Amino acid sequence: MSAIQLPLLIGFAIMAIGSIAIFLHGPKGREFRHDTQFHSVVPFIAATAYLAMFLGTGVVEIGATQTFFPRYADWAVTTPILLAGLILTGLHEHPRHSTFILPAIILDVIMIATGLLAALSEGDARWIWFAWSCAAFFGVLFILWGPVKAIGDNLGGGIERVYRRNLVFLTAVWLVYPVVFAFGPEGLQSISTVASVWIVLALDVVAKVVYGFVATARFNTLPGAHANEAGSAG
Image 1 (tube, rainbow, N blue to C red):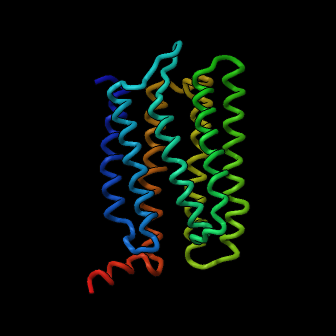
Image 2 (image 1 turned 30 degrees about the vertical axis):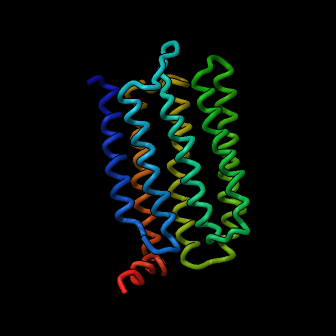
Image 3 (image 1 turned 120 degrees about the vertical axis):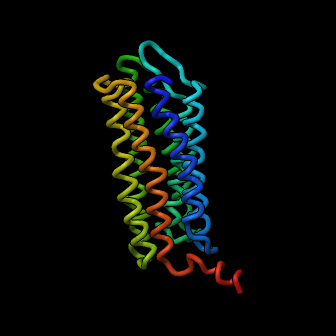
C-alpha cells in the first residue's frame, strides 16, 4: 500500500462508519427526519469517492500533479446537500423562502467546477480559475450570512440558534479548503501531495462526519425531534 493509499483507505472506513452512525444517532421525528437523511447520506457519498481514489479510479497525473476527480465529484454532490439542509434550517422549513436554495447550490457547483478547472490548468489560468472559484464561494457565504440569517433572526426560536451554530461551524471548516488548495500541489506546492491528502481527509471528516453528528445532536434537543417515534410506539 502506497503512502497516498493509506489515508484514502482510512477515509473510506471513517466515512462509511460515520454514515451509519449519524443515521442511527439523528432525530427520527417527522419534522427533522430529512436532516438525519441529509447528514447520513453525505459521508456515504464521500466513502464512495474515497474508495474510488483508493482503487486509483479517476486519479489522473497531469504534469507533476495528481488530480483526484472523485474528490471533486464528491464535493459537487455533498456540498449542495449540506447547503440545502443548512438553508432549510435557517428558513425554519418555510417553503416561501426556499428560493435561496437554488442560487446557493448553483454558486456552490460553480465553485467546485472552477476549482477543478484550476487544478487542471497551468500558469496564470490556474490562478484565474482559483479566484473565480473563491468568488463563487463568497457568493454562497453572502447568501448564508445575509438574507438567510436575517430571516432566521426574525423568526427566532431554538431552530434559529441551531442554524447560527451550524453556520459558524461549516463556514470555519470550508474556509480552510481554498487555503489548502492555494498552498498544496495544485497551487504553490508548499505542501506535498501526501500531506495534502491527509489534510483534506481531516477537513472532510470534520465537515461531513463531525458536523453531521453536531448538527443532528442540536436537532435532537428541539421539540418534535422524536414526535412520530412516540406516536408509533402508541
